[in-house]
Amino acid sequence: MTRDRLRTSQSPDGRLVAQWHLDGTIARIHQVQNHADARRGLVVFDTAKLPDLADARAALPSYEALWDTIRHERLSAIFSVAEIPTGTA
Image (cartoon, rainbow, N blue to C red; front, side, top):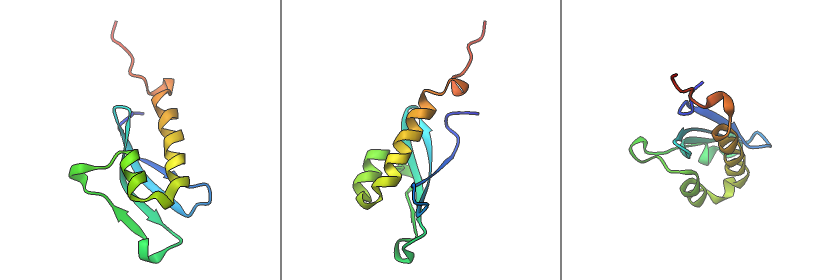
């Protein structure tokens, strides 16, 4: 498992789903799906300038539950022993 893999997170109510990856320790958001609102069904961010979690939160503040989930999963991924590269001896 690598830290920079594409990840999927879901809000607790299942209404919002985001795809993101770790860039070092920064969560970069690729897209968000809103299953409850057809007008805002899919938000795709520019791949040349993916927002970090703070910028995505500022752009879509009503998605707070999703951003909180990603923040928690980001910290879990950063501190996951299974994802720490092993050194060569």
